[in-house]
Amino acid sequence: MLSNNRSDSLVFLMVLICMFALPGCGGGTRPELGQVQGTLTIDGRPLPDAIVVFSPVSGGRQSMGVTDSEGNYKLKYIRQITGAKLGHHKITIKMAAGAKYRDKIPARYNTQSDLTEEVKPDENVIDFALTSS
Image (tube, rainbow, N blue to C red; front, side, top):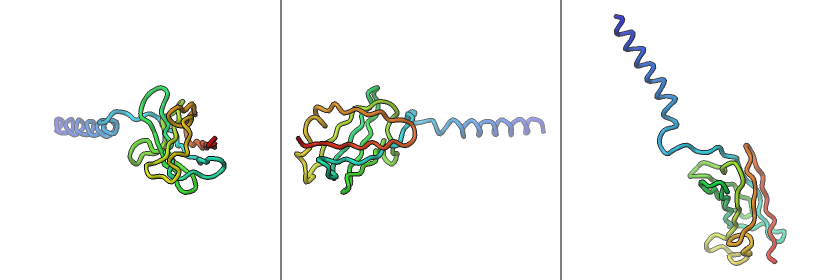
């Protein structure tokens, strides 16, 4: 009888270990993320179909979002996971393929971007007011 109780205890202990250990297994750990959303305008008007990319200065996965018809974006980290890694980011903004205003984004916002922002824990509202000149 004692051996059965000991076996049951070992099984229970193994189940507990698996419950806490398995969620962290497979695919590595995800960094802490802050939720990021905002509005993108150019010359005071909403800019639809723009791709906003946040690249962590410290390295790691980029986050990106695409603006809607009102110029609003929300960053995605991966698949259905929203947000961006905490810390400082270099920002690039470019137009989606086939977008109406494809050539409207000056190089200083994309290929030669010097835009930076810091993503903090919780909610971050980061708006961009671009100018075409």
